[in-house]
Every structure is written in structure tokens, then in C-alpha cells.
Image (cartoon, rainbow, N blue to C red):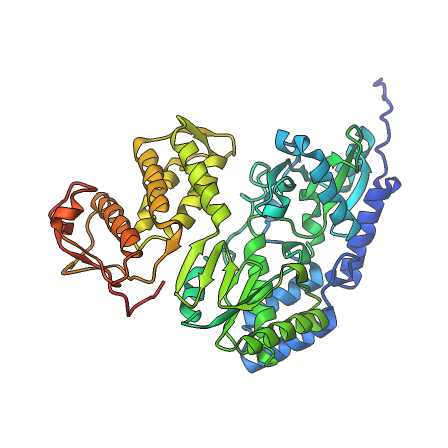
Length: 498
């Protein structure tokens, strides 16, 4: 006769206040809509009314409207395929987050107060068991912390959510979510001689989007609650964060493709407005018109959509304006790196060029700085960044390390030297190669770019508006080859001024 051993009853998740609140909010979404969540500012009825009217007028595409309407009704899934998520995964926070516990806790507290994040209570074995009973699969992702790029908050740290390590980003279907930003060229195209630009920043851009309840179990994390450094609580993001790979494209579709075009449908916006994620630059020839339209756009987003802007960071229309890291000057048609960023880039380049190895996070950081630095060089200089991107191939985790190659080290020093020459300013001169019929091979293109950029940086300081480099002077910087020994001319007028 078999003996039956009593098994302890599984804790009921409804007995946990935090999990019970999560279930209640899930029921709110199912019975009403995702905009009915306490932390959602989007105005569901007025938004949909104006959006479908914009679809009828041809300003908003039908697929974008259907996707946005589904997200506002049921929540945005950010492309996560929940069928690929299996088991219960737990990850510890990174040392950077623990060391900056005060700043990270303050940031978490703001999200909790605004309803963007749900506090599920103190972490314990009972809560973990109840959590596993409530959901078939869960993920507690690791948190990190990085410094803010704003000078006024250089001592502050902002939290980062690592969804790559947990496999959430790998389970994201990026079909229809991949896109590229072309804001730099758009600003250069629309900001003509003597034009004005006004810049506004969307408040809490990504956290505007409510998440679909089915993905809530994969946005869990543990951290200290308040000023306490001993008690750890469990939290759940119910609105989008800044770590999921599908978030940027989802927000772009919501704000750029739908909200902005809704404003154009209602004739609130008539001027061109390049957008970089959540930074909006309205451009026009009359500063009064630019300011008036941007204010009207703010009011439209507030009243109709429920989207707000950071008024403290709003910058009035001006001919010299700071946007996406550059000072754009329509009077001289130049863009210049901010002085603080220029010094930071040169310091980092010199530091990393002297290191024997770099981590994946450091490679990605310096590659972004190198890419932005090459925007102050003539076209073709982007090949100087390829050696750094090549080092990242095969690395997946932030702490993965690889030895710096001779080519990458040389490219970093080259960019440092060129920044030292042009002081981070892109001149109005357009680079052309006289008599060139085809592009050279990549190894020759890199050598050509180094020479061309050096002379372009020097030519930008001349008063005659034209610089000509002949075969003798070219060889002073780099050994000449047959292809690019022809003269290099930078005309002052014509072509793309940037």
C-alpha cells in the first residue's frame, strides 16, 4: 500500500496585494482599454476620432492607424512573441545600479508615483511562489545605471534595463519594427540660409505607451524601495521602458507617423519638422510663425492626444539652435559639435586608443562618438568607423571583451587629430573629386578619406572659399596612390551645403 505524503498547498497569488493589483489592472484593460490604466495620459476617444479622420484625408496610413488603435485598445506588445518565452528566469542587478542606488531608486519612485511601474511588494520566497503560480513564465531582468548626458545632471545616474541578456529582445519579431533615422540630413535640407528652428522635447516619450498585459511578466525587476538599502521590492513595468528593442519603432509609429500627421491633417502643422526619437525641430523662414505653430502643436497634443512636452527644455526659434548634439547655424550653414561633447569625445578617443582591450559596451559607446564626429567631416569619412564596428561582431553581452586591432586604434587617433583640426565644425564646403569615375577599393577609400578630411578641415578656415590640393601636398599626410593623386577641390556654392 502506497503512502501518500501531503504536499503543502501552493500559495494563492490573490493573497499578495501587489499581484492582486496587477490582476485588477489587467481586467481594466480587458474590459475597457489600455488608456484606462491610471498611469496613461492618452485620451482614447478624441485620439481615435481625429486619427480616423486623418486616415480618410490621406495623412495617416491605414496600417499605422490599425496598429495604433490596437495598441491603445489592448496595449502595445512591442513585437514580443510570448510563445518563445519559457520558464522562470531570475537575474541579479549590475554593480553600476547598486553603486548608484540613490539615483536609481529615485527614478523608480517617479515611475511608481506616475503609475508607469507597479510595486508588487517586498521580495520573498512566498511572493516568488505566488508569482510562478500566477504566470506560466516570468523574467526578472537585470538593471544597470549610466550617467546622464545633460551637463546639469552629470552626477546623476539613470537606470538601464537589460532585455538582451534575458532573451526578450531575441524573442522580439522586428519585422516592421526596424527603421533608420535620417534626421541629420532632414535638418540640413530644410534649414536654409537665414531660416529659424525651434526645438521641443516630448516628456516621458517611451513610457507614454501602455504595455499589453500578456508581456507584463517579462518586465519584472528587483531593487531597493526608497532610501532603504536592505529591503528589496519586486516591481513590474506596465508601460514601455528604454531597454526593449521594439520600443523605438513602436514609438516612432505612434508619434511621428500618427500624432504628427494628425496635426497636419488638422492644419495645426504646416512647416517641416524633423524628429529624432522625441526631439522635434520645427523649421521656417519666419521666427514668429515657427513659434506660433510649435505652441499650437503643443496645445493640440495636450487637448486631443494627451501627449505632453518638456516646457523647461523648450528652445524658442533661433538661427543658431542646438539639436541632436550639434549647434546648427543657418547664417553660416554650419553645424558644430557642442564644446562639452567635443572635449568629451577627444578625451574618450585618446583614452580608448591607448587601451589594449575594450568591452562591448565601450566599443558601442566609442563607435557612436566616432560616427557623430565623422558628421563634421566630408562624405566618405564614415569608413573610419567600420573597424570599430567590426570588433563588435560575435559579442553579445556588455562585458565581453576583445583586443583592439591596429586598424581600429589608428582610426581612433585619426578622428582625434581631425577633431583637433576642425574643432568639431562641419564647413559649408562640398567635397568633390575632379575627374573621378569610380570609387576606389575600401582600403584606398580609407586613405583617401583621411587626406580629404584633413584638407577640408584646413580649407574651412580659408577666406577665399576654395582650397586646392595637388599631388605634392597630398603626399605630406599619406602616401599617394595613383587613383587619388588627382586634384581635390571644395567649391563654396552648390550641392548639399552641409
